Amino acid sequence: MSNKNEQALRQQRQQAVKIAEIKATDAEDMTACILDLQTYANLDEDSAKVVASAFRYKTLPNIAREAGLSEDVVGNLTNGANLMTNDFANEKKTKKYST
Image (cartoon, rainbow, N blue to C red; front, side, top):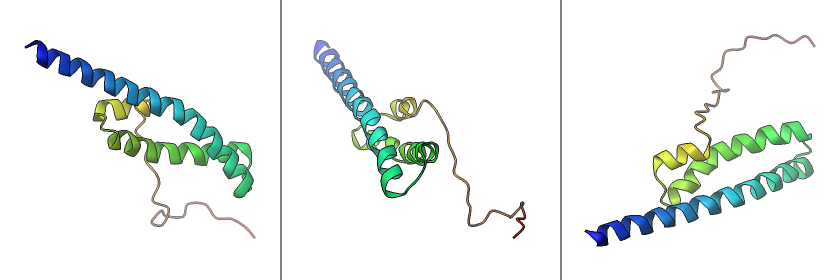
C-alpha cells in the first residue's frame, strides 16, 4: 500500500514541477511575443497584447496536455477562461462603413 502512496506522491511532485515550468516560461514567452508583434507586425502595444493573449489561450492548453497534465490543470492554467473565437468568414455583416 505504501508503494502506491509513494508513486502517487511522486506523480504529484512531477506534475507540480511541470506546472511551475510552464508558468515560469509563460510570462517570458508572453513578453517576447508582444515585443515580436510590435517589431515585426508593426502593432501598437495594446493590439500586440490582444493578439499575444489570443495565441496564448490557443496554445497553452496544448502545451500542458503534451506535458501530460490533467484537464483540470489545463483549465486552471488558462484561469478557467472558456474563450471562443468568432467565425469571421461566416459572420454576417452588421456594420456598414461609408467610403
